[in-house]
Image (cartoon, rainbow, N blue to C red; front, side):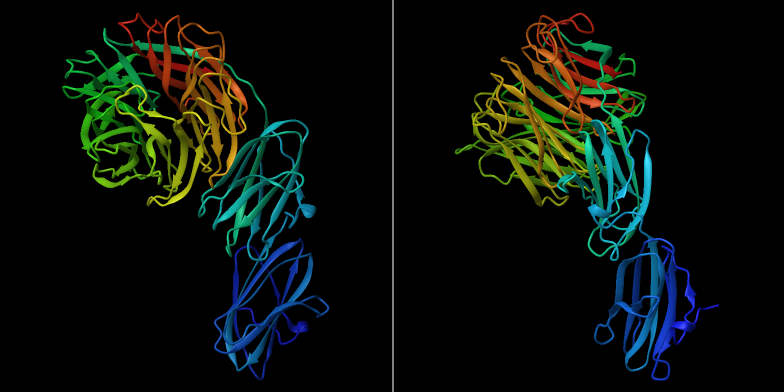
Length: 632
């Protein structure tokens, strides 16, 4: 039975409201100009009201129990009327009254208990500990801010998630003076996440609706003690030929099988096509070799990047028909871009397709990634060999059917010499590219064709519109090697520098660096590190908790004792840049790592090359090695 309004406060029916909106339809006229409804709230409540469906002017008023007005909405004509505000416990009356003319109306009302305060001074006090706690509330037109306050008695890692959203809402972490520390502002109803480390002290959380939206939400809070861990070697596999063999890309599938990609000068699998061939090798979860596919032309060929999709399909990218060889994965030489895809069956590699892409005279691809829709994106450098020499970044995308979808040149939007070295994509389809720009180009120096460069990290929308573009410049040669993006849209990049980056100090020779930006391109932190010898960061990976893993090589004692030549190293950071675990490994000869990934089992996997004996007898000069490390 429909609820009928009263014509006075004493006749007003009591309406039970909740977060689920209720709608009442009736008429105000010359003979009955007022309709009254009564609501009662036991707790502080966010109240939302809309009066619509008008054929003539009508207005709405909110009254206290004694009949005095709190607020009203009296817009001209037949416009909708709205009241949105927070109310203390008590009895209230809603009065719908005639303006000009008789009219029907629809009165829509909802009420959400407001447990969180509207300001820092009114913030709801909560406990943040290693126990996961969930707080449920509402934000909308009547409740623009929900504040929470917590205090830490020691430094901890805070993990925050805003979920169960029906509309867009954002999450912010503030210090005790209200200054912004971290923000998560994902589009739509995607979960908001913040993971960071905090010192002892008092902090605030602020939940806000985006625009005029309204939504209920679940806020989960957990503060874990800061931990240190140890990296322990589980296994190392070493494969090679009498010639030089190098590996640059590594991925792990759903069964913890490991796949690596690179280049070989010998016969890793079958007969060499000539020169240097590209290859992909598969290992089981215990490090045993399962399969190798060696492909190429009569010249030199390389796979420099490797990606895997949700169905364990592989995508390798690199350069074919190299005329000027180089061991530099940024620009291995002059040739054609190649994309190869494989289906895997219990670790067996089944070649599906190979596509070449000709952009300019000399092209090379450095990295590849796959988005949630199965679109494959690759990035690299396109060089015009005619004078004057020019080098631009490029990004190309292929549909999951293997068709070229888009090819974009000069993706760094800078006219100076540039090359892309890494590409990533987030859940919304935004594209992230890292590389070098403002460089001097010398294609006759294959070992180091780009010098005096700046590192760049950039974000683009899914259609290629540049959202932000950042550079790192020490005054010397600065290179961004790889980047990664977490679920909140934070961007991490690693590389190396021959100078002192802003706010940093060179340890000598070449130093490694890691930088973090938020989703809007604001730098969160930068760490330059090294020894007095050469130190380079080559690859980066993230785990589901937002921890950061970096690998590279050093000619000094960076994360342990120097073994000789160049040593490989691995370091794990928190999302705030605190070192959690590190390892330096090697032999008296040279060891390098160019790829890193984290498996679903939490193990860390790296790939590179060695001149020594790590997992087997050296087959001759540089061999490929793959390492699996656990964390305890």
